Image 1 (cartoon, rainbow, N blue to C red):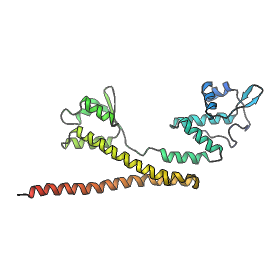
Image 2: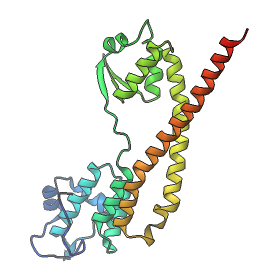
Image 3: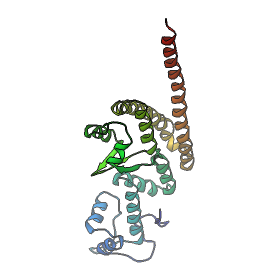
Image 4: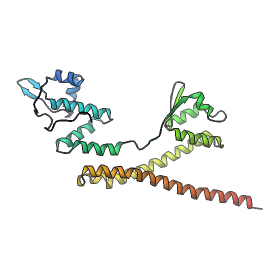
Length: 253
């Protein structure tokens, strides 16, 4: 994060300028109502009081910048409140965020590809890019359509789909198979998440956060290799069985 809080806990006075709520809102680039909402949600500590005037410190401003940074990273306000609570209890927020990054960094490294609908249709033989087919692909999350342009989430998957269709598999059959594959992948991912949650994340109080971050980083490639190797082995078995059936038919009198 570009902005870090001071060593002193939020709400204290670490010296420096103090702000009225309007001045703090202007310095943070936020409406006053947002600051009041943060206070209601216990994201922002109460100000120091001088009579009826509330005075906010540089710590409050640093905290607001931290909240903005976390919101940009996709955190919910409730998640931010929990992170800040962990920091206030003496945990290193950098270590806490390291765990969060290890857990939430996207596993997919696929590169999306965008083209016109005509360019997409030209990749497939015959009249396979029809409105109802596009709707199915969009519902599965494979594509998004914006006017005359379509974006596929994965260049590699699009190339694999084109190869299957050009080999003779109808596009609608490929999409149907993709739907079943996604269900299986969801079940498999849920199993891995359960294992990690029960046996790794569940022991977070017993581990150093830095060690936990390293553990999660090591688990990522291991899970991917397990799935890839298992699928390759299953394909070896299934392809061999299918070839044996074909050869058996050909050898039959």
